[in-house]
Amino acid sequence: MKYNEISHFSHPQHKLKFEYTEIPFKCDGCKEVGIGSRYKCATCDFDLHMHCAIPTPSIFHPFYTKCFFQFLSRAPGDSPRYCNACEKDITGFVYHCRSCGFDLHPCCAKLPMVLDDGEVKLYLYRKVSSSCHKCGRKGRSWSYRSKCKKYNLHVACVKEMLVETWHEFLRTHGKSSSSGSRKLEMTRIPSLRNMLQSHHHKSRGKVKKCCEMAGLAVQFVISAVLGDPTTLIAGVIGSLMSRG
Image 1 (cartoon, rainbow, N blue to C red):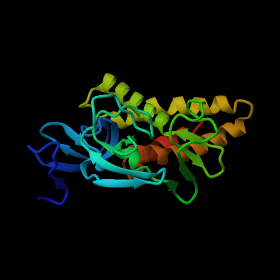
Image 2: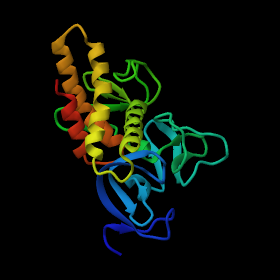
Image 3: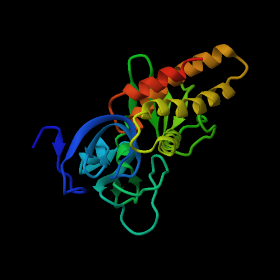
Image 4: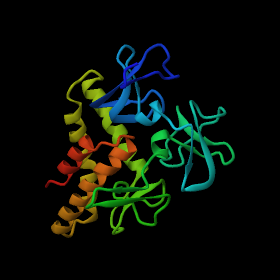
């Protein structure tokens, strides 16, 4: 077997090959959106996030010190379940704690506690008292917050931006289109930038500074939520967001 190919229980009929894509895809494991690194079956158009393709059998999480999460191909029981990190529905692969009943999407379970590029540092919180720059609400889901505590973004809001972009991309171009990265940039940037401007409408300087901060911050958060350690696409989005 080649080093960039794997066999996976969820798709035993073919090998999955590692690749990098700038076109949004839906992970056939956790059913969540993804961009960037993935394992793909070219024959069946089957895709898996990195964290879904090569999962850790069991994990602990610092937010739930008494929990022991096990990787499952589907959540137990027949009742609807949601991710305790992003509050989105669980419809596929999941990390589940049998004793507490908590659930985490694989990519949410592996979100870094700190995102740091040497200039901008963001910390993952289970709950924060400040409002989100995207939705304007407090609480709701896990959040990434800047070290200065002036910038906050819900993990759930990032996912919503990704899903909205993904659906718009598919509606406009279809799964086979090659213009995904350009459409991705065009559809995601305005919503967050406009939200930031509405928060700081009294000062142009504050708008520019906050948007620059948002550009740097969001590129890390998007990459983390997508389960991809690279920041190529998110970096492009962030740089475009900081303009104007």
